[in-house]
Image 1: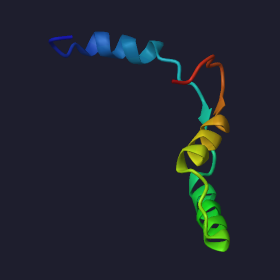
Image 2: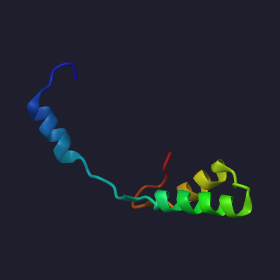
Image 3: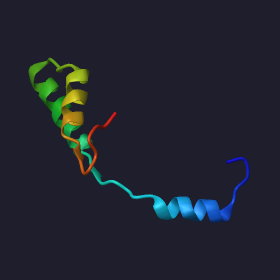
Length: 66
């Protein structure tokens, strides 16, 4: 839209249906990951942590999350 038209904006906002996405407690997972690494002197791959957390995302009415 090249010009802001309040009627078009209002119609667009009225048509929007939000989707609920529940994200895992990332802060606690990172703390646990750090503590585990400190206790064993080895940290697991940060990519593995990231993959694990993304798998725990709960999507409502969304077939794929990219």
